[in-house]
Amino acid sequence: MTTRQLRRIALALLVLLVLWGLSQLLSRGSDRLGGSLVVPRVPPETRDTFTIIKAQDTVRLAQSAAGVWTVDGHPAAPAAGSDLVSALEDTAPRELAAVSPTSFARMGVDSGAWTLVVGPLAHPLLTLLVGTTGPGYGTGYVRMARSDSVYLWRGALPGLVRRSPDSWRDHHIGGVIADSVEQIEVTGVGKGYTLRRSKQKWLLGTAPADSSKVAILLAQLRTVDAQGFATPAQMDSLTRTKPRVHRTITVRGAGARPLLALALDSLSGAFWVTRAGDPTVYRLDNWQASQLLPTAASLTGRH
Image 1 (spheres, rainbow, N blue to C red):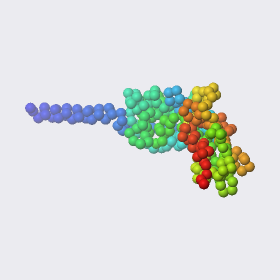
Image 2 (image 1 turned 135 degrees about the vertical axis):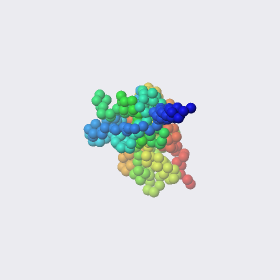
Image 3 (image 1 turned 90 degrees about the vertical axis):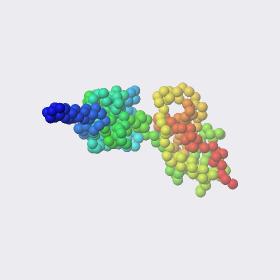
Image 4 (image 1 turned 180 degrees about the vertical axis):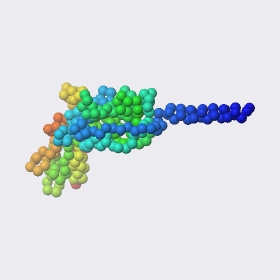
């Protein structure tokens, strides 16, 4: 074999190695490629409306002129809207992860993605498809609508968009400060009972109550949060079906002024709660309802 032939073989091998290296680099959809996603700045007049679509679920967050956020017309969870605005304006780099539609299903940015629409649906400023979680904590794959480029987003936005519809709503039912409570009336638990503050002690009817157990009840009443909300179908069932158990608790302050009034109906394995003056139907688990409505015997004072 001549020197010229050896050179040709070496050159051919070098070309093959270069081509193999390029094919390996471009065939990996998750490898880092050049480029970064640039999200247009959301002006104040546009960022008051967000719509999140996932299959049959649609969540619409809107901000009033007074700065109050609602979710589908219901009060939003504290900071829900502002958290989404902050996450969208996060300037952390977004790395290009794939450039082919063949990667859409694997990264969850195909037709099954969560769709975030910023601004009016008819003329959105931005439409972003959010897919599955990325390889690191706090990451997720995203894609602009009508784009083949998929990016790895580092930040809170993917996790926020993937939240369940109920989690956007305000779960707080109400609460009272223990020192402001003078009387607690409970019905539907046995024959019902009344707890009344008398100077430095509590009375259950005319008998002394266990102050430590009353303190536990007051602690439960300080913050009452729901586990969820009734769906339209469940609300319809509540209006047509008589509940197995109907209970009420009314907390009063000085001068018998109502501080908190709740009605609890047991149906379908949970308690559905309404607060006086609030049309929302909240869901409480059985264990939480039992803590809010202890029996009279459990509050009996020690002798």
